[in-house]
Image (cartoon, rainbow, N blue to C red; front, side):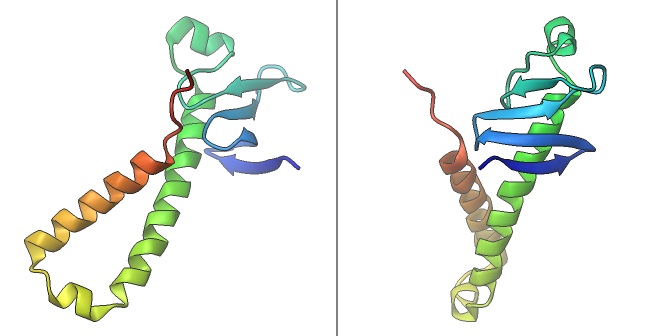
Length: 112
């Protein structure tokens, strides 16, 4: 079953999470554009190299990652013994490293 979401006022159908999405066209009411987080088959992308369809997909992905990271950190924040061992500078470094690691794990790998 396909999953439908809203992002930046655009309707998105998730074909393959992280790699393929359909975004409804505004100029052609019955049309959908196939997008990834890098490319789109719409005319705007072909002319300008960017479009609102990709912006909506990227905003959706950012929201998903932010929610997952937030959940992870809410769990960790409840463990006071973990934070008691770190000073503020080290705590900030840990947060940035964890967010970066989480994002790298979520990024789709290039297929050969």
